[in-house]
Amino acid sequence: MPDSAIKTAWRFQTLESVERFISSDNVLAQLSLQNYVSNGFDTSLTANYVDSINPKTGKSFAKIPISSAVQVDHALQAATDAFKTWSKTTAAFRSSLLERVASLIEENKELLAVWESIDQGKTLARARVEVDRAATNFRYFATFILHQENAVRMIDGVALTYEHRSPTGVFALISPWNMPLYLLTWKIAPCLAFGCTAVAKPSEFTSMSAFLLCEIFRLAEIPPGVINIVFGDGATTGSRLVQSPLVKGVSFTGSTATGIKIRRDTADQIYKHISLELGGKNPTLVFDDVDLDKAVQTAATAAFENQGEICLCGSRIYVQSRIHEAFVASLKAYVEANYRCGDRTGAVASLQHYHKIVSYLALAKEENATFITGSVPPLEPSNGYWIEPVVLTDVSASSRIMQEEIFGPVVTIARFETEEECVQLANDSAYGLAAILLTKDGARMRRADKRT
Image (cartoon, rainbow, N blue to C red; front, top):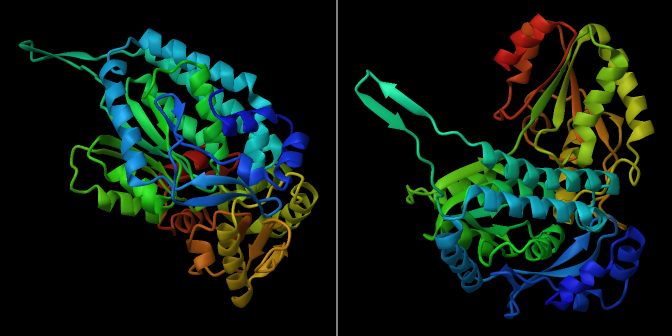
């Protein structure tokens, strides 16, 4: 391996060895991440760094560079140069390389999962699932591109039209901190599969798995410049990346506010393809014909998986009145038994995010919401960013708690009487990402699904 930092990270492949290493006094000197450009780690000096912090302890363990405009431009030029040849490769060739990446991810599953768990705060079990899904992303698109079909149409018997697809160019891929490896690979795999090149930027809060992925790309012998990874924040690194005229497309997953800013910043670049995957405030609708135990388990998983740090999480539960009290009691018992911190619940990803969640819980207390489980944590945590799962009732429909995305282990429960009221409550949101319907009545499910 060409770089001491990647050698260092790669050497520790078990949870115990990583925890020992990151607790050492000189860990920051040994683990300073570097950009990956043209199959090499960029050794040029960076003026600014931020610390990567283990959410489970609140302690720093790595230095993350804030890539400058010059460094971003260097990576973009590498991707632009590589596009000239990569775009002309066959689907079979690209497929074989993506399969190789998938296999290397699988071979190094524990390494990736352990570092992901340390870096993001999630449980190791959850991290292992996401590593599997990262490998699946590459394998899926490796197969998909081998079975592409173009449409041919005859129009009025006088004209024959056909589709021709060609690679677009360089893409800027910006991934979030909640599922760092999985969502980064969900962007990189299709981009490379269809003959485009990329400069990717992970969140500055969770950069380790992207750093390790660079070595996997090197081992897989992806041609130089096809995939480049730069580290940094949104204001400096991300902004330069998305606004560059060399970038023909942007794929961003993250907050709604940042997505709106990207749209505004690129509005005058009409050629640029923009894909924005933003927030959600998703309802879980529980009708009174459900199996109560199954409904409780489903609702809890939807609310608290990955500490509620998933845009698809069901953060608003609506329960039909006849079973409301029984559901609340069962959910309380189930959550308290199964979602203890450090067991099935990890730490939230950063101190900044911890403060955000605590502010919403303080608001809930001010508004006299009922805490069925959990409480308001201290504003300044002493040993990691841990928040017990919170179930709230008696929250006003107009409250910010009900209307805004909290993105943490917090769920509200309200009741409804009729299907019509249920649909109205579900749609009482600025978001429209997802919904969960729990009922045994297939006709009701289809009716509600069409209107939710």
